[in-house]
Image (cartoon, rainbow, N blue to C red; front, side):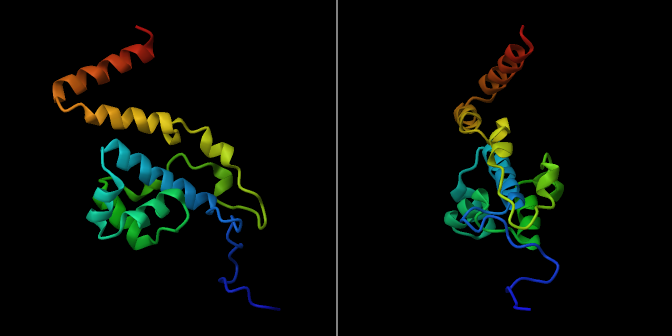
Length: 147
């Protein structure tokens, strides 16, 4: 039997077409979500981790896997538990079948992964006055409730 270069018992990495594994993509999206909620740029996160912003980009796209020690560093820098990065992960992502195609529609359906949401968060954090920012937040919640 020929060696494939991967550990025994591990399914082949999904996304041999250049896209990352569904779990790597999900974790990257959660990194991006938390970074944008904090109002941080990729450069600021990279600096806090001692990385280049290009590496942060690759993590956020799921193109590069995030190792356990780096995930721990991310949780400390972004002030979230490690489990945060796996929250809301589709159940079928945890055990992809060898050769199975990714289902990007699952990730596109997540409103937190949409460009519109990230733009809204960016605009929110551009409001420099804390009181005004709080009032915008309260207004947004009231509009969502239909008041």
